Length: 581
Ligand code: ADP
Image (cartoon, rainbow, N blue to C red; front, side, top):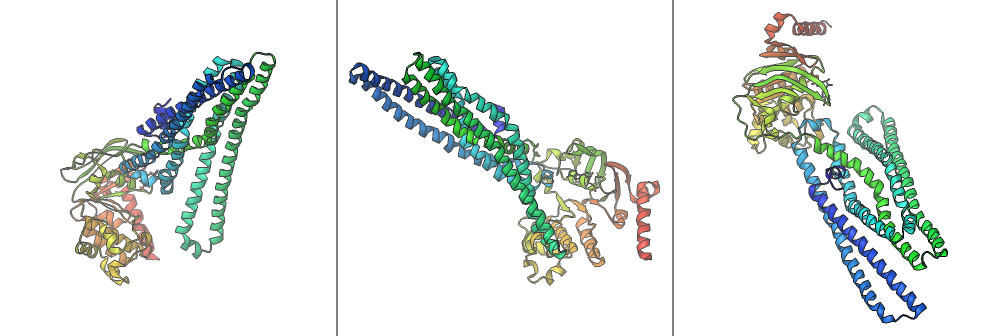
């Protein structure tokens, strides 16, 4: 009952399962104690009835009265225990599950985050865990305890009088069958509502982020209308979901309660035919209302339980993503990067096939090829942002998949197109390159990256805040900041994605000058877009459709007269057209 499947279905920790078991145990005890109390009440009332009819001596009731008192006290004590077990203990579970998730996130390959919507991830950490918390504390122990105690009570009632027992309890399995039948519907509705919710929050975020462009192009009405539609759609999916599960839950509750009517009917018949006395019917009615009570609470929450399984499976998806861990002991012999027969897939779609090449220390290796041929993927894999499916990637002879990503990355500096800048001062944005660098070191890097000149023109120089994601800076300026960061880090390996963004000639020359300072003596892997870079590279790897089509020095490749030679010809033609205009 509380095995691995149960643990996965509700995303519980080992301790969480223990807590739910304790909650279920105390629920069983509480329900049985209450039933015991009702049994004594029944004996006591029978005794009084006898006293009235047959003048039986009253004092004989004393032991029963004392027992009733004992049961009342027991009931109080066990209720407190149940409360502590179901609510108190389970609350700790929220913390544990969040910590477990955060630990997991820390160890996941960095590529995982590139692929996930961050709103979605936050929703899992906060929203999904909250939703589950309610189920852990209010449902599981209660419901599973009630299953067990009801089974015990049902056996006792059947032994006492099977006709009345059947009349009283037939509704319970029918109600549950109905609910479990509706489970898929509840889950599907919840998935739809969740997707609609994410769309709406994405829409809000997108509108805020792009408000400038939207205003500039007079698209406000259109965007607001789209946003309204998304929010409306979310609301509708929520109402539809609530309504359909509500119908099932209420129908189930009503069916269970029909048991009262059938018990009265059956009981009345049995009394009329002299088979039972009134007191027995009375006791049955008392017992069954007590049997229904815990189920009623559980029923009200059962749709939440089903829906929470969607939350739990989102949590488990994160837990099931293989972690990228490894040794912190990273002592490579030099920093040559070698790809040996590497294959790699995104979402089961293979995008690199049998890729082999070597990027030597002290050399610039250019990756070229049409868009989508796998250049960025190769660069990301070199830094172990993802783990590969087959083959081997090594740095200085050490397989990168055996090294802790944090340790590995300390040997890499990355200058990518989508430079991430933070809403902080220029100084702090550059300092991100190396935690703890002094102001002098930051300034030296900034100068070497040709940042100084434009930073001096900012109102507060290096202390000027640069706006979220550097919105106050031009493309070339942002890139130079990211080069300054890389210079400050001074890592032996540089991964560089040349910007395709059109930089003006002055900016481009400055970026180039900054880059040549950064690249000297390093292992450089560059995703090259400009012929100038390609032709001055020590080695060129031409990718096409995820395979290495050609590799060698630019001169060798030109002599081969293959794809590379053709690309050079095309680009040269392109240039002569521009000049000729
Ligand atoms: P390039 O840098 O040469 O333009 P990429 O390495 O970006 O090529 O892409 C190689 C292939 O992998 C393309 O088909 C692209 O659509 C796919 N791809 C790239 N990134 C992802 C991703 N995060 N998830 C799924 N597919 C991706």
